[in-house]
Each structure stands twice: as structure tokens, then as C-alpha cells.
Image 1 (cartoon, rainbow, N blue to C red):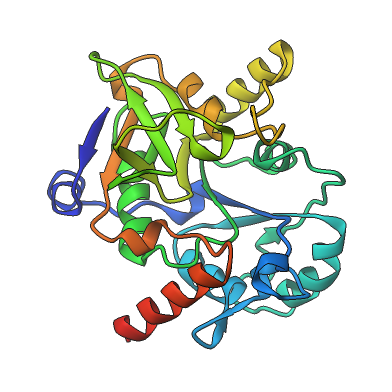
Image 2 (spheres, one colour; image 1 turned 120 degrees about the vertical axis):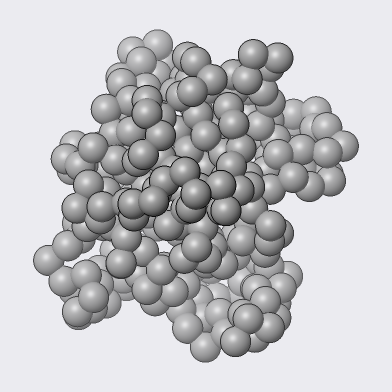
Length: 269
């Protein structure tokens, strides 16, 4: 794996990614309980705009198709809003998953609907990712020969997630604090954004379904992150994009996250 800066990507890959070649998958099963909110978390307002509105605005210029994977309850609240949104009218699908076992399970519901060569996956609460990051990650992935997985990374102390790479540059494990893994003092954390080759994504799922997924040690969930090493067989299969902003990695999990991102958006305007 090589980690690129935005400047390096602009110098090496002069063309923009083609939206017609990309589908974005957004798992949307989260509730706003920890935010003290009685609606789906994706409808929570951050600095005057809902997470949903911000995500659509962020992704609409770059992805030709949208797939929102809903829980039944969230579908009732959110699908009518999407149907009224002129920005993505006729460009989205909204499969429903009942009793999701985790993020990987939710993503699996989107697989039969993806017919583009590239797929962007973003968690439904990653509201602070910038357009520059989206554009850079997609460009790096589409024009890197043989790339199977590309994602933004941020080096931080006391990481919540850490991508462990061996001496040959291969991704070997993704450690998660939430699953009780022993974490390093300094680690490479993601931002809930993943660009993948669609064919490899489907192959990885076929392998995991065939062999049986391993549930998280603490949560018992079918997590997506432990599947990522299966995308990588050579160091050229995976690219990283170096993030400069910690706030881009923050998902809206609780009121502390919401306050941090409120301040971030106000600072950016």
C-alpha cells in the first residue's frame, strides 16, 4: 500500500473520475437514540442541515447511482424525502434489510443492484468528509492500475481503528477498539469511506458467505472492516489517501460528536 497526498494525486492523475462508472452505497439503519433524537440518525441536523442533505449534496456530483440500505423504520421516514429530492430523482434505490447483523450485512443487500465497475461505500453518519477527499479518493482509485481498495487514512494517537500493514506493504488486519482488540499508541484510522472495485467486492462477499463470517468479539456483529484484507493480494491492490483533517474522520455517534462537527462547519463557513 502507498499513501498519497492530494497534491500527488492531482499531479499523477489529471482526469476526473467518471460519475457514470460509480455507485455509492450508504447503509442507513442507525437510530438517533444516543443523540436524544427520536428519528433516524441520518435526519439529525448538523449546523442547520440534516446529515442526509449534506451527504446527497456531497456525493451527487460524483456518483451516478445511489443505494441507501434502510431498516424498515428508517425507510418509512427517509424514502419519501429521497423521492422528493430533485438532485437524485431516478438515480437511487432503497432496499430494506430486516434484522441487520452489522454493516457488512447491510452492504450485502446492495450487491445485486450494483452494475457499475466501481463502488463507493460511506457510512450514513460521516457528514464531515470534504468534496476534495471524495474527488481525490475516486480519482486515485479509478486511475490506479489494478486498484481493488482505496480509502482515506488519518494517523492519530489512541486510535479507534487501526490498519495493520506488514513489511511487504500488504494489509493484514484491521484492529477495532470496539471489538476489544489491543490497539497501538499511534495508528492509521479510516474515515468511513471506501472505494472498491465492484467485481472484487462481490468476490469477497462470495468467499465470506461460503466460509462463514466471523462475528465481532464484543459486538457479535458481521463487520465490514475485517473483510478488507481479503481485497488485497499485492501491495498495488490497495491505496491510501492522506487526510489532514481529524474532523473528516468523525461520525455522528453522540452529542459530543455533533457539537464537534457543529463547530467545525461554523469554522469552515
